[in-house]
Length: 441
Image 1 (tube, rainbow, N blue to C red):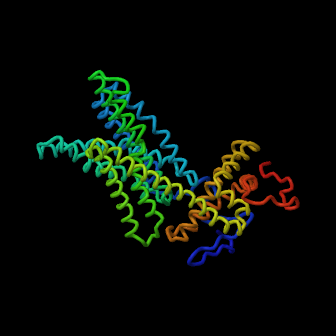
Image 2 (spheres, rainbow, N blue to C red):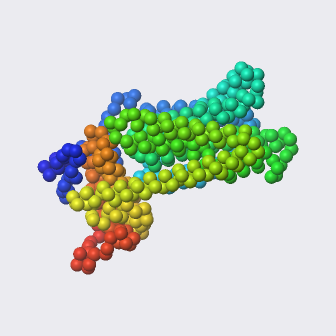
């Protein structure tokens, strides 16, 4: 900023002092959301986004043709309808986990599309080729199928899904900051992959039932639906989330720890492959092998990872509560805002209060304010840990700029929410706002 009161000192920058009309050096006057420096044509976001959409669309068309060829049109439609059932639930669960600092939908849609199209295509082609090659080399198709399911498929499928997490980690680094981001990106990728795989399995099961005339609970379709949709819709997300956790811990590591930043994602991928191989190989452990692996490994692993994800989310809220008071002391926030912003209930109350009293535009402004304040807290936390680049000052100014633009709208709503939830005491009458209404323009 241009004013002289802003001084940054090593090893950690001081909070800029608040001014009623601050001047932000790093933010263009017309900035509405995020500052976007100019790039060369081939590095522009539009060109890269178009290339990604084109590649995924081509993969989608190819995988659609392959699955329809194997299942038939009727089997494909039945498989599609049944495979869709768990998708909204899984996506809602991962999105709920990401509510503290929601990642952009473009990253989540890319991850889902990558899993459903690109990763599924790689898996089908590579698994089929490898299994046929092993069957030809060993002249034993039965052992080739077992080896393909327990060794080849876990390596190929988890590597293909991990590619989406890696791409977001590399090209959307600002939006990939910790364990929760890794879990959510990996979860959406695996949900997309499982969706396509379920279409294939359920469509083939329906075709088998049509061929042999079986129906009802004794049908192959019903058995496949029960195992894949009812009992284990979380299987693929559970495997790939291990990779996401590795990338998430690496994202939170200091920039100087290069070994950790490389080794942790590799370790997460290896664990994902191992659990996937154990799951696929459970059928070879006897008639009760599937249930033994399900009860002894899958459910405990699901519980542990669920606890880790929720704990990480709570830690994010504690980070907000710990970092934002410095900005409140400097005058950028009111004293009631950090407690309100560190409570999901208080955030919802603030948006609801603004919507009820002043309309949808005010509610959107409060939501944007909450998002920018959260990003500011995480930015400062990462700077404390040494995981941000040299553009810290510019990014801090950008976020403060957006907070300042919405301050008069969001401040009273968050103060109301903090009082309503008991996170701050209601001030005496002589300290109240005296009827001031910042929503009156």
